[in-house]
Length: 178
Figure 1 (cartoon, one colour):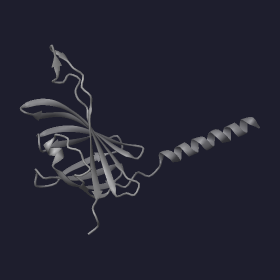
Figure 2: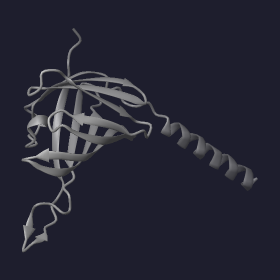
Figure 3: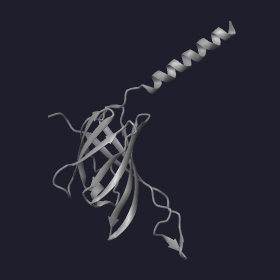
Figure 4: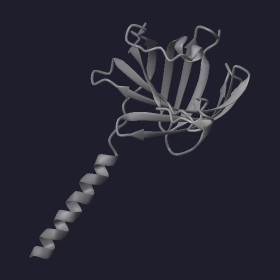
């Protein structure tokens, strides 16, 4: 009898864990307008000039069109949440970066890796964007994590000084339907 109860118990746990992983992902689709009063400056002109973003979500593909004040047309992005890599061509620095995307719970996590040109120098780029939708579905928060290379520019007596990762927050409000 104990064996039967134990098997039923394990089956029930396995069944509930299987359904917990199939939870629907938050619906990020729509037009999102940057709330500059709640967003932090990143010291990246390109990122700081973003005014709005449109998201199309058809899992596992997520398309974003981001509008920057510094560039006339909206810049398209395509991400895949099923483990496929994608490439992103940065119109500001003319560099290509590899992106990987996945859902971590209810957060969309996009990892950009590549090289960029800044002040006539090539530098490694390692940035993570974490998107989280508010419970009411009207606010989208993006946490920007800049992972600083451990062999960075800051040196004391020719030895590299470890630097902390930089984190910034950008807040978007859902645009009303026309």
